[in-house]
Structure formats: structure tokens, C-alpha cells
Length: 220
Image (cartoon, rainbow, N blue to C red; front, side, top):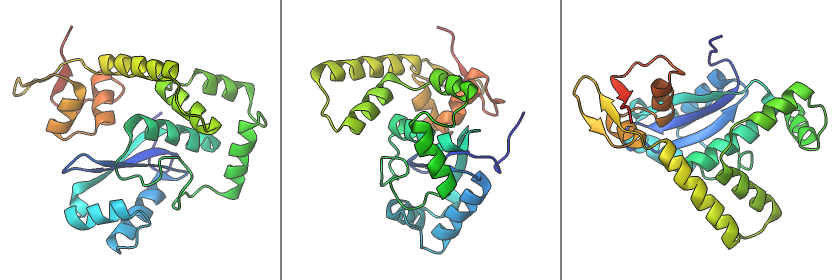
């Protein structure tokens, strides 16, 4: 079932000029989008990095896009952290989800997050979903060590390096523009030069979303 922006989930605000992004989470994506652009328009946004960029490049060069819909609202911060770790967004002042001003989670949902971390109120079905969710090994290691306050050991660094190589290999397939026959060496390069959000392009190429571009994966 197709979802709309009244749903909860993870979003990005992308600068169409330089592809720099901001990542956040929202219980109501439509409301969150309005809040962001209203604050930016009035030069009152709490994120100074994003505000300065908005003032320089103007509204028409910023795009709000849903990265992932999240059904369980108490899981929003977990998923937001996953994407922050994955993309390393340039406009996020805080690199830990929920640690800065601007989050719209209610006290009730914060309580649910806390309780879920302790193993409470989570149904068996939800536990299974959380257990099987996709998160990179690099993200797991970084988050685990951050919570423990430990520095990365040499063994851990090797694991992260190996994870990075696997991730690079996964998204290093060539892409072709069927209209111009131009070939891009990687999905990332195609995203930048064709001015399409990396997540949107990946969804186009993997069939998870109707392909509105002229780009297709080249066979290996």
C-alpha cells in the first residue's frame, strides 16, 4: 500500500546544487516538512548549517524527500541513527539522533523508546522485525562502541574496513543513461551527475520504486 507524507518516517532535505543533505525523523512527515521550510523562510531555523545554505542557495534548490517509512513510531530514532551513520549528512549538526533541538517526539513516544530498549512492551512480531532489519555491520560496530565509550580496537577497525569494502562493492555497479548512452562507473556518480537523490536512484534501479529516470543498471 502506497503511503503518503502524513505517515511517520525518515526524511532528507537535499541541496540540489551540491547534493549535501540533512537527515531527520518525524511522526508526521507532512507537518515536519512545513515546519522546516517555514523556519528556513523566516530565517529562524535551529540548524545554522542548513539555514546558511538555504539563505545562499534559496528555496527552489532544496528538496524534501522520504527515505524510509517507519510504522513503529518508537523505532524512529533507531532508524534515523542508522541513516545518519550510513550517509554522514553534512548539514546535521548532531550526529546522534535525538540529541539536538528539533525533534518532535512526544514524551509518550520517548517513554516507549526507553522501554523498548529495556525489552518492554515490544510484541514478538515487532521483535522479529527489529531482529531482521537491515543495518550495516559498520553501523552496528560504531553504535556499540559509542554506547560503551570505547575507542575502536585494531580488530574492530579491520571489521569496519571490510564492511566498507563490501558496501562499496554492492553499489559500484555501472549505470547507463538509455537516452544519452552515457555510462557512469558507480550509482553514486550517476546520482550526482544526474541530480537524483541517491536513495531515490537506488530504489529506481532495484525496482522498489517506479523508475522516472532514463537510468538503468548495466549487466555485469
